[in-house]
Length: 434
Image (tube, rainbow, N blue to C red; front, side, top):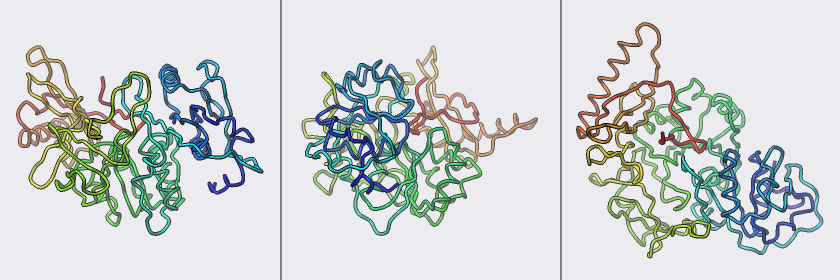
């Protein structure tokens, strides 16, 4: 469907004007329906609360209250507006109804996105179209974008705007669709640019369908892009441009790295130079730009920006020579007898083993040190049968040897468990709780 159809028709029938000045929960299950609703409601509604389809009902009630929602857009199968206490409910459809005239779109609409945390009610982050589209520059040609993200999350919305504003097209993902089927659909429609988290890409590389596509550009974001996944993508798609972007829902897109190496060049860290100001304070990455959200939504919500307008991302970095490397989250540290361990740092080392597809490092309680480091590991070729024991024992010794070589002793995993897959959130990130 061409979005230019909205110049003559509406997905709301003749009820678009009913949303004037309202705080609207955009909650269709279908991504295309949600996309049409977002485009039409910008400039009409006071606030759009962009709701992915997997938000639990108890979280929805808290979101509705915090965002002062007084209208809901849905299609079939969405939450009951009466149960949520929402007075106005209008259905949206991809079948556009012809319109003689449209209400004036004269309002600066607040776009509220949900953070992609793995526990608790997500925070509500306020953007507008200007901050969401600030990173996008017009490019040559008309790329055919694909993304493993849902467009109702920050990473997916960025790709949506790149396609719509940048003059390209977008092939939407489908919830629960097997990777092989998704790749086949992307190939059939000639995808040229494809985006996802490193966890998404590991799932692609693990299957037999990775060669179904031949993208011109491969993009990673949302998680730390370790050297292992970058090298594997380079091997799988040698003719493709390869880039990883640093972005968060709160700080927006900070920068993009296209040299095929993990981390980012140290010269990126400078205030007042270019579109984004970047600082590192006490090891934590901070960003300031026109791409940054204006704040969190809700009475009593914490301040997002410091007194100088910077967002503390909570991502910890370490300078080694002329480059900064991500070592983990400030709030994800494992405390081993008073010594700090970042799980992501250990995972990066484990993933260097040629036989490892991915890993998840976590803490296990210890009566002596309080916690010890353990790891779940997925192998590129999972062993089975009678020879599985000796093979995995040998792999475990090799992985431990790599860790002992490259990590301080207290960071070396005390135990390794081989698993068939790693848990992943709906946002495409490793699930680190539990």
